Image (tube, rainbow, N blue to C red; front, top):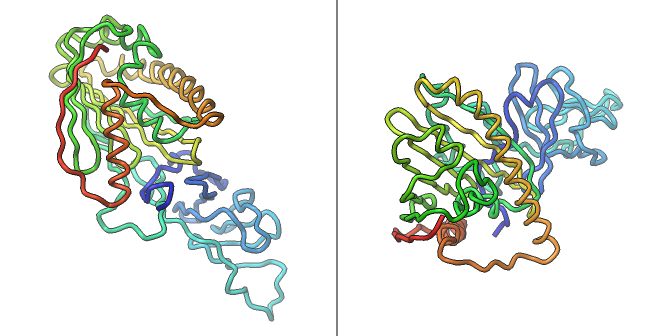
Length: 336
């Protein structure tokens, strides 16, 4: 079994791919992105079959990707269509191609398929809800983190860390009781969080007047959805898409959508600032963890508040083996 699940992964945001080729790596595989003369995006294995240099160091010429070493030119399907030094009496070799990588451009993201097989019809990139819908706004961030997909997913599901890493912004350390209801779903795990008392954090004071409805979801293989409902017509949903680069390196793309009524302009202004602060805090602790794991290996000791993450890891293993998840439900209570 491959280390990395077969799936669609975000490789870049649409705006990042312009006239120049763009180098990326997914699941330890170098990929080059470029746009042809019609503006259509393509993805190829980032290696020229001639002398094995990276095509991403080249340029786009008449809609074809030109190798920087000898000028071989490749179409969007990976076939070499022009070799400048080749005499007219000679044919382009049959092996003069580089593998094409399946790519879909959707809702401002470029997704590629990682897998030895072609995706089934029902296997499509994640569709963002409320994308550009009336009354809904959104904000996006991305970062490369020196840690595994699994540990980054855990960070977004793990509520107990928020009072320490984001103390004052989100919660106070172990300040109140929380009841969590855990459910397995067809594609992962859902957690319904019931905080028994209102926290006194900055965000709580600014946004919350009534009781908050909070739900987290793990969507196999590497997406987390975090949803907060603050009252009628007031909702914020964060999506965290984790793209594996290598065992201890991940590209994180976050997409936060919200409808906050008359507060929309204020939240739109604050969201990037708060989002970047939260990301810096998370990245710092995750990279600290990643460095220790790189040196000494991963050896966790878990307790009751870690139950959701243990469920997620178990669900991911079963889903990667193509097993159907059995319905499970459990309630736990701990200090948050």
